[in-house]
Image 1: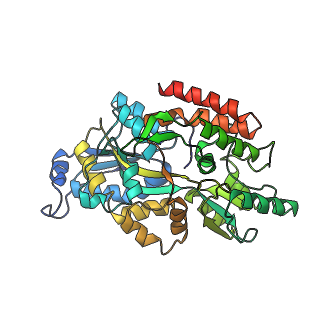
Image 2: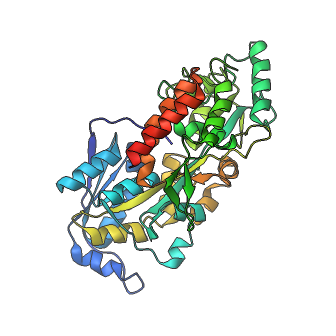
Image 3: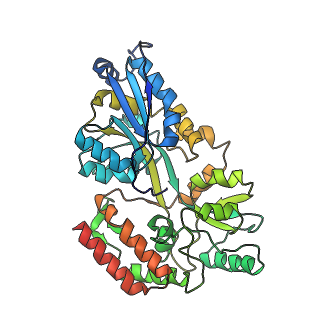
Length: 416
């Protein structure tokens, strides 16, 4: 998962004018008839990488339904731009994005529930369906899932460390031998990174939100600022710049992967998006779960899901529902999106097609099998900035108790 900063929308219009209708509709869902009757144009917003993969499928959909399909690439801050455009009546019919957008999008009235039959939902992984379900309703059609793992240079580190202490010991030895310059590449940056530190935070006993009786995250039970979170950051602080020197603010999203591919570190905490660069660099590597603290809980990375959403204020909602229900659920589209950026497909049939060619997929899945679904509740928006800044401060040497207590108060104030 890459947290992107706000910016100006750069839109590349790929107008796919299509005419004619193909095949019989007698064996297709009823939604097909309403989609055909609607006619007109379907507008899809996605990021740069997914736009190219979507184009041929959008074109096929246009031909079958006798409509024009336009796929627009929004290069930065897609979620914010979608909400703004939706409120102004100039948004798309379908948008592609992360599942943790759902709470904010529902709160802003920007998306509708999607209509999938039970057998269609059954074709996706359980965690993917859970991730796109909000307040008991399915709000997105998932196509990929992702989580962090430990990627290691097997020439420098042949064995997977069982604990973070084992990793630190091996990394220090490599550093003393001048084989690496960093013990671990885990991105922190000047403002912290809640997503990447989360496995260590959970291993040390910390949590963000408790859960209600139905299993949903409970924003009233905030873990940040409680004794468990303070104890967790005391452990994290010992790995920081004034302690073991394992975690550093100088390692950020701009250089963590590059440091690993440049063999400045033997261990990298990252996701499937990193493997293309690792392969290109010719680094011999393997993938294993992020190790936790000795005697602590299992390290639990966030599990994130990428999905297609139907815009509540789109001009052609019948077409949008038809597209997400009967085209996004096709294995060949999921495979094309995987090839555009290698994240494990959420559709089981698509995963089965590609996992034989890519053993990394099974390893990332194993690393995330006990992960936590990234909270999609609106309260999660209050977590990122204060939590990240508190993390960076503690890693820089600030007092964990004071810093995390203050962060908890800030977050609680924003949630109210």
